[in-house]
Each structure stands twice: as structure tokens, then as C-alpha cells.
Image (cartoon, rainbow, N blue to C red; front, side, top):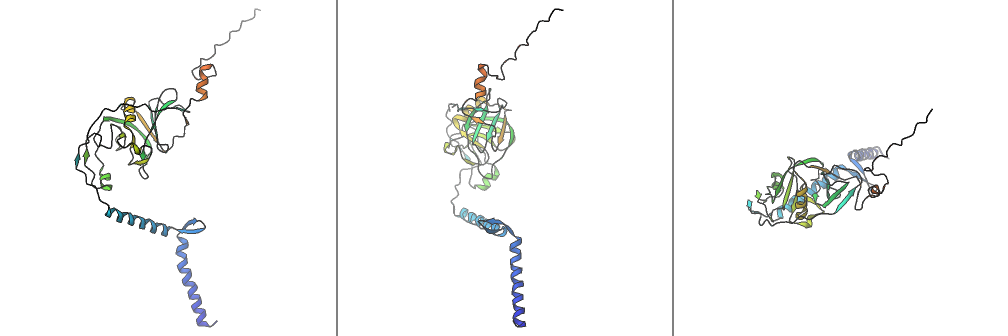
Length: 262
């Protein structure tokens, strides 16, 4: 190999090494045996965001009136949901929201609970925590938060209570947050993750719940309710009434022994 060719060969190797090094440093893992680079992930994410932004420009934005009449306010008869049994004791009168299970439990005495199907927050709007009911309203008005109106231009400033109003027949407000447990006039959304963080119920169910829950009721929102829930009475509870050692069984009386005379 001549000196000129050798110089060119080593220069090519050096250039290739320089180009390869940043990619190796940016490597983030492997998928199906192929390397994945963070820069590629970020580029694809930006492309997807740009495409969504372009699609929004072509959509026809529905412009609602600034102040809308919610329409009729019919009487809604309460509907009792199924009763389930809890494996572990919970304070009676507590509300437990299981977001993964899409269920709201109102705890009764004797380890029982009403189980209401609900809809929950969609991806990016999930939350967990403990709040107390601060207000209960019939056919409440709806004022979309500023953040929601920014995401969905054209929304009204406020909608009075009624069948057109998305809050339905009742709303139970959670502390000082923007979240509520409320009814819905679109029961097809029940069981889905489709809200902006509120919990929707069928109007008949939220009217039933509002008869039980009061201002100050504790509401515990969890991602998954790990305590066991069953539709049939646990055997321990069933047998407790037949002398098999339930919690309500009285303690046995002490056995008296006669003292022997000396």
C-alpha cells in the first residue's frame, strides 16, 4: 500500500469512527434486536405532534353560544346498583373510586358496598388522592375551565343545568378541585376512560348516590382497589351466624371450679 493510499485509508476510518460515536452515545435500548436511539424517538414524536397540529387546522371547530340553556330538567328516579362484598373492612359511608376497574363503591355496613359503573379520566387526566364532598347540586350549571376551552376552542362560557348539560342530573363536588362525581346524558361513555378527570355515572345512579352521600363524605380515588371484591357473601361472614366463630359471637363464659375442702 502506498503512503498516499495508507493516509487516505486511515483518514476514512477516523471519519467513520467520528460519525458512529454520537449514535452509540445516544443509544437508548434495543427493540427486536435492533438498537433504538433517543434522538430517533424524539424526532418521531415531534413529527407526530406536527401532524396532529396540521390535522387540527383542517377540522371544523364548532362554535357554541357563549351562554347556553341546558334544556329540560326532568325528574330522574334513583336506581339501586348491585351490592358486592369486600374482603377487608372499610369505614361505612366511604366512597372508593377504582379508576382501573371503572367502579365507584359506596361502603355499607357488614363489609358490603354498592358498586356503580363509571367512566374515568382519559390518558393524561388520571389522578389519585383523597378528597371530601364539598357540595351536592341538582342539575348543576357547567363552566368549562380555561384550560379546557383552550384545548377545545368554541366551547361555551357556561351552560345552565338540564339535559344538554354534560354534568347530568346531579354533581358531587370534590373539595376545592375542579373534579366532580356527576351524571351524564351520554350513557355510552360509562365504563370508558374518556373524561378530563371527573367521574361520570348514569343519571339514575348518581341520583341514588346523592341520597346516601353527604357533604363531608370521604372520597378515596385509587388506581386499583387491591382489597378483594366479590359478588357473593364470603364464607367467613356466612358461617359466623351458625356458631363458627364470627366477630359478633360472644366470648364464652368462664368455667367455675369448686374448691376442695381441706
